[in-house]
Image 1 (cartoon, helix red, strand yellow):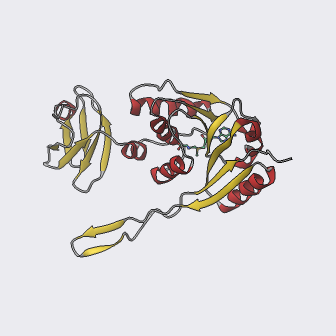
Image 2 (tube, protein in one colour):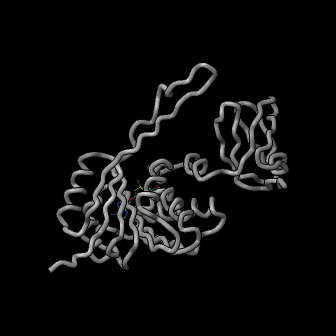
Image 3 (cartoon, protein in one colour):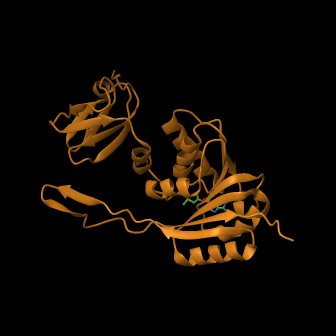
Length: 261
Ligand SMILES: C[S@@+](CC[C@H](N)C(=O)[O-])C[C@H]1O[C@@H](n2cnc3c(N)ncnc32)[C@H](O)[C@@H]1O
């Protein structure tokens, strides 16, 4: 049975599937170049319903998915896009009950993906240099989940100075991730996995050289994911002309135990 959406965070999707994310408020109005709709009217609808603006332009109403949410927030920091976040969760083998370290938190897009994978269990600790980013990310996470998750802690600190505690998994999105490698000698369990999101090849080389030199990482793999959308419209079935080509490289490594004489 469908339920009225109420005064929630919603996605208004138009005929061309342009999406607007809005928080419904009593007495407020959703305005675009195609006319307006009263929030009170939207709040009465069920998910998937269609409503017309004052100029007759139809909008479909949905609750936002993770992808809708992170792609539609106003951003100050560059986020990890869903295609890479998805791979980081899988290649990093992120699963419930783990103790996960992440740095930096930035906008909190990756934090949110990890928190969903942990599903209220284990713990995510996020190290972030900038208090303003940390505060904004915490607000962003609360906005999507509806509450601040009890298993998330953001610490204002420089990860290059060291890691407190021992983690099962670590995810890095930092300008110079090679400075963190030595800290995993004590900061990561044996068999633990680190995935780093690294935009340029020179950064990748410096990081991978450090992973090899430290003597406790193996299974080092570097890959890049390119998502190639296709247009499927009548007889026009072909790759889209323009795609978002490069985001970053993902470098995965696993810590081994030095148990030989
Ligand atoms: C690109 S943003 C991270 C975006 C994030 N992964 C997301 O998906 O929203 C990089 C973040 O790393 C933080 N940072 C840079 N150097 C750092 C360091 N040494 N220790 C902790 N955080 C750091 C920056 O302040 C910034 O917030």
